Image 1: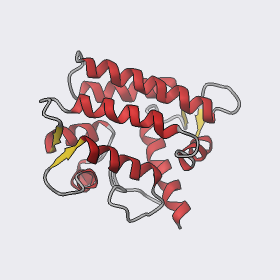
Image 2 (image 1 turned 180 degrees about the vertical axis):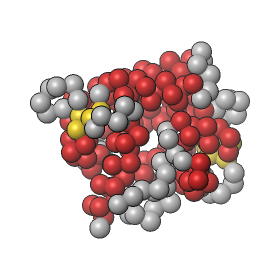
Image 3 (image 1 turned 120 degrees about the vertical axis):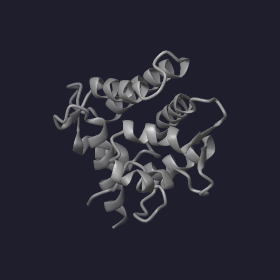
Image 4 (image 1 turned 45 degrees about the vertical axis):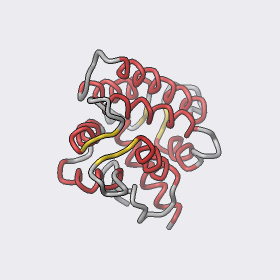
Length: 179
C-alpha cells in the first residue's frame, strides 16, 4: 500500500505537468506550467524569472534521470521511477529550488508568508479543482494558523514527494489523489 501512495501521487503530479495532455512530459510542458503560475501573480517580478529558470532546471534534471531513450520526452512510467526515488536520485534538490521560487512569486506582499488568497492562486494555477481547494490549502497550512510560512511550505511539499503514507497531511496538496 505504501508504494501505491507514491505511485498515485506521481500520477497526479504527472497529469499536472503534462499540460497538453499528450501522455508524455517535455520541456514545453514545464514552460507552460511555469507561465500559468506566473500569470497568476506578477509576470514582471524577479521571482517570475526565477520560476522560469528553476522549472527549466527541473526539466533538465528530470530528462537526465528519466529520458532513457533520449527522445526529449518522459513517459508516465519513466516519471514514476524518478518520483519514487526522488530522495535517492537527488531530484529533490532541484524541486527545493523550485519550491523557493514558487514561494517568492506567491508571496505578493513580501511579508515572508502566504495568506489564503496567495496559496489559493498558486494551487489553482496547478489545476487543483475549486471543490478540493480547502483541503489542499490545509495540506500546506499544517499548523492551521491561516498562513503558510516558507518552512511550512517546504516541509509539506517534501512530505508530498517523499512520504509513502497515504494519510499524510500533505497528500491533498495537488487535489485528491485517486488510485
